[in-house]
Amino acid sequence: MLQANTQAFLSYTPNSYDGEITLLRTYRSLGGDRAQELILGWQQFSTQTVQVHFLPGRHLTLLRSPHVQQLAETLQTCLQQPQ
Image (tube, rainbow, N blue to C red):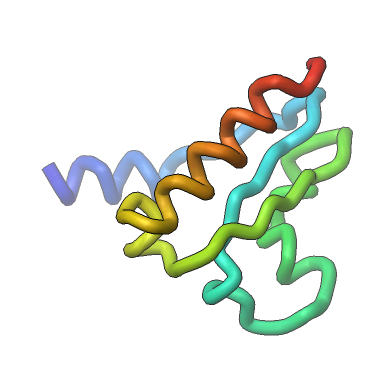
């Protein structure tokens, strides 16, 4: 299964998306303060802007209390915004 997932990942070529991308990332994942580092290369896949929302914790703790509450609030806010 892992080998099949790895092969699928390596052979996938994403298409351009004609909409805004919402990127959720943790404060602890920051490695610098340059704009490209903030959006992690997602701008190349969209003709619109990349909206970045910073969340507490780390990648592995984001779905655990207390960080998951902030994640839920941020997702709710994003989903309520007009398309």
